[in-house]
Image 1 (cartoon, rainbow, N blue to C red):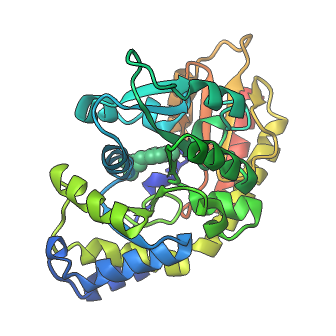
Image 2 (cartoon, rainbow, N blue to C red):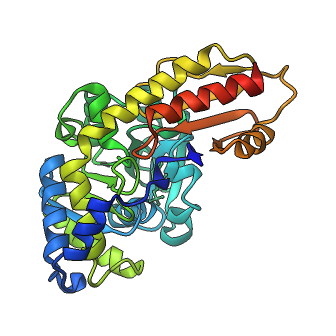
Length: 343
Ligand SMILES: Cc1ncc(COP(=O)(O)O)c(C=O)c1O
């Protein structure tokens, strides 16, 4: 199967399995796992933060950040295409009593600065207190676009002016840094907290990391424990994450090139319109034309018969994601089959 549903589907490489087998471990709830400590310190270093905390998933990383920053009844400002809003089961509301204040994500993934300024609540007995702004970089549902460092700084400045915190869902922050040709720490410098995933383009089997100031991460450790995310000999999975950080970052470039090749190949296929014919990271989004007598779900079924798995994000919106396990030959094969099916 050529699996383009997501970059989460990668399996650990033989080298990762080796480091997993050899990893020194201890009880991480007691802070005694040397491999987890090494992963956390490398993560903090790469993103220019004081401290970091290994956590089982991106969803739990975002939730731990939100619960640590906010109190019940607080409001957070975020985009209508944010993963936190769309795909994290309403955890912040259900478990934290945090009210989302949703703003439209623009085509380039940003929230309009004016919209953010207007969304911040002024002090009034009727209002919830705004506590946090959350951005996502890359912005998955806007085509995997990268938000620039300048934009992030401008949002951080609004947050600072109003005494708010800024959290970044940086599940794919290294893809963003690569697309912008920047040190990732430049992108994360302005934010108070950032979560990134090891289990996506980086190819590790499990885990995410939350980074921020020492004091924030200390409090987030309590939140993680409350959520049941305190792990014991977690070095066995942290080892794969550390290996990925040390060896797989440059490979993201290949994923981006293959996504561009895929988009170029699909450009000539009839019945579909690419959202961005020149994608900057590892995602290719397209809409099936209205005239085409085929829904995304039906296309998915036909492609599966040909050995290709795709994800769809709406009735006619399809997403294809390149990753460590997708080769140049796979891209050629996918383009060939699309042409065969759609013409
Ligand atoms: C932008 C973004 N944030 C957070 C997550 C959540 O990560 P996880 O699947 O590890 O919970 C995802 C997952 O795909 C994502 O795309």
